[in-house]
Image 1 (cartoon, rainbow, N blue to C red):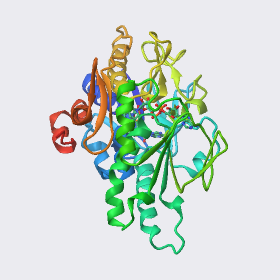
Image 2: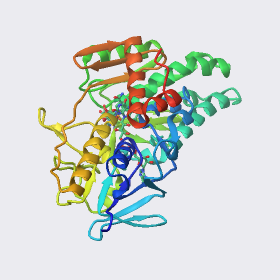
Image 3: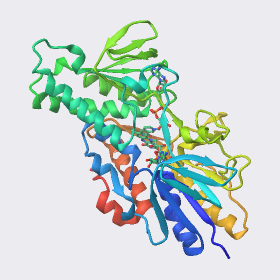
Length: 398
Ligand code: FAD
Ligand code: NAD
């Protein structure tokens, strides 16, 4: 009997947990292949830290062969170019793979909402290589400043586009690091300008207002200026242009206005909304019995409010558990489970020992929230690689 080919695309939260669970559930009864651009896995949810330089980029990534059993999983380091659904093939930059079951977990890309200049002039890649560039660029601005005969304010003006969780977590880290950068490079702190520019009438729209106020007060006390109700309409070489027509000059614009799914989805002809496939309850793509879609590439609706769930690592990991069980069920001729997310809460770091969050019905502030955030980061490592991985790569929660 021919063993089925299970091909997993993307080694993010969804892909890694699916691979780990499948290798246990189906063992050598199937050929499991995992394809990823790099030979390492990174934790996207930690990337605001290396972006601002408060954590080394290497702490957010790990070699794939150090966490997955590559006796049971065939790992292919390559880039996915297209999925040929009719032929049940995946086209890679350097080859092709045939599948019986496919899992799409390619993550997300920056959403620009059509604002011109984002890809040309803003930092918008939330990947290991993307955040390395942001960190180096920020340090270079500080290093350059004192060597200019005519000081330019825009050199030390940092703009964050979007006050969602990514924008807030990044400015939390940056505002925490600025005093140290000023000291290192002999620059008076008042020369540094940090703006968070948000289109909606509030920062962190939809989040608990008391926690939003706590976060804004804290960040303002570190010198951050919020511009709320203030959509950015263009990014230029010189800075940003607001919907009001005003311009803010800045040599650093960090883009965090939300995400869309992988461009591979649309390129492969799947029906999608902002690059995300509205999946069936069992996580398969509509009309495709052999294609599962998980993580940021999948769209599921929160029936209570009739709106999509936000794309999070929390949901990607839970989808991966259901996806692995459902592939096993398909192989055994069993019945498939429906996926229901269990939202445990949301915790966001604000730099240093500060954070905010809601866990269950409890609101958390300051060091309690910061402790919880680190426990959440460690919990993922535990789910992926057990206590050994937490000891090796985890964060100290204190
Ligand atoms: P990812 O984890 O992004 O992984 C996708 C993988 O696919 C990557 O390894 C990538 O290299 C690979 N890939 C992409 N394209 C290709 C290709 N063409 N070929 C081969 N490989 C490819 N969510 C939370 O729940 N809690 C948080 O605290 C939180 N914090 C965040 C902080 C930041 C700064 C950011 C940016 C996001 C945060 N999120 C958080 C959201 C969370 O990171 C995503 O929802 C989650 O990473 C989605 O998981 P995924 O498996 O779908 O994709
Ligand atoms: P988001 O969609 O949550 O927030 C983007 C923000 O940008 C919104 O407030 C939006 O109003 C604003 N915006 C959009 N266009 C704009 C414009 N032209 N000018 C100014 N502002 C504009 O996106 P995100 O923060 O990138 O987060 C992506 C996903 O990752 C979300 O699902 C989020 O929940 C998740 N995430 C979670 C955490 C956490 O739990 N700690 C941290 C980071 C990200």
